[in-house]
Image (tube, rainbow, N blue to C red; front, side, top):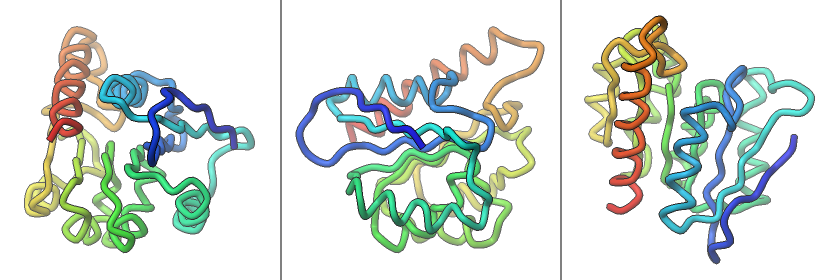
Amino acid sequence: MRVVEEGRAPGAPALVLPGRGYDVDRPVLRAVRDELVAAGWRVLALSWTQGPPRPQEVPALVRLLLDDLRPGLLVAKSLTTLALPVAADRGLAGIWVTPLLDRPDVGLAAARSHRRTLLVGGTADPSWNRTLAHESDREVLELHGADHSLEHPGDPARTAEDLRRLRTVVRGFLAG
């Protein structure tokens, strides 16, 4: 693993975790990172150097990262949203991008997560459970027609518009 630091704000950092095949420099996580830095956060962005962990390894890995880095906010994408139960147990605020809500442990953790939780998903993503997301009583950004990468294949203008919308919602979430 490699961790890159951005921003120099004092206090607990925001920790940004990639997905299996979605690095922290890809558009959605880059946008969230930019908004975090603009809002005054120090950001620690993790990248896989030896390939991603297996799904069953994610909770233990995230526990170690939380113990070591002590973030004040966790941002996770797809694979690393398997740590939502860990964050819920610790009362850690988070932004969960394309959370694997189709997995019972992750879906149930969304409802008991920290009140400062933002769930972001696309309706064309098979792992997005819109009913569970909205019933979680947490902030939700649902992008109609967006896939698991929050893109609209063949429609770059719509993808760009959704990225702008994500930035706006994240900015509001961070200010709230």
